[in-house]
Length: 123
Image: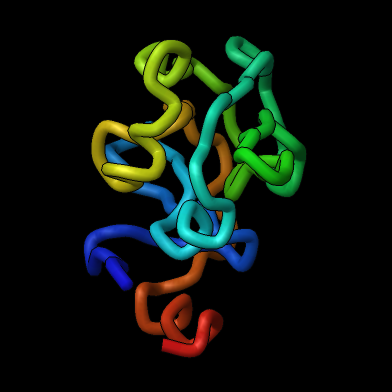
């Protein structure tokens, strides 16, 4: 299981990469593995200020649709448009090309360390 040490995590299996006052957000390797082949990512919250825990979009896999939850509070400033034509990037590169949104952070809140996330998923 790939759990990069330079990221922060949530109990809902999102990852966060903080860069100054902005953050990139996606789903973890564990989450994409549980979902299976991802066929569609929908984010209609670009430009909106969202609170931590709010649904920012959905990810559709062959067998299920799952909500995506904001791991922190902030304004969604960008959706990874590559996912419109290539949603499988979430499966093949969840921590790189498969990122989902970029957020201008207003409140980072409590996020899990890599060690705490490993404990959560039993690694």
